[in-house]
Image 1: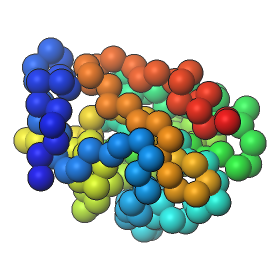
Image 2: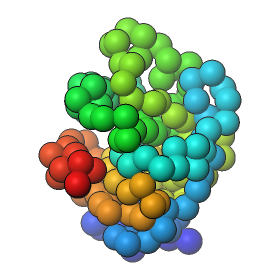
Image 3: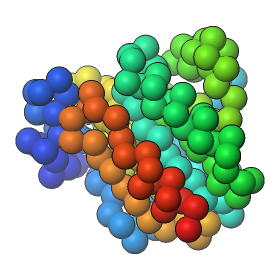
Image 4: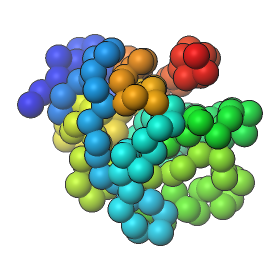
Length: 170
């Protein structure tokens, strides 16, 4: 299923089509399966009872993606135990682990959607033709209701950290 984002989301100024189903405010968050840095399955449902900030990005090997992860890692250190930040890309877990080790990223949970693109298609972040994830943020409350969603209109731009963090803290 195609999203209705064609012409609304671009990558380097060129329009892209996002595959999957776009989320809406108030939707119940769908469970998804991804892989952690130890090549083990992880699921959204493993974080039930917590506020979840999903930080979505195309590739850890780009400057904006690295900045996004550094920013959320810094902010995660200031949050309570009832808020978790899940950083999701289609990078291989090996690359994610290398980046986290080199950058001291230890407050966010780095996850990869490379195997099944389960997250990317269920949340409408999969870029057609590239098999990368678009940039964005999803905030899910303790009852698994989506309270904020941002599909960044130009993938090379940073997301709105402040709005997402403010909503997550409410």
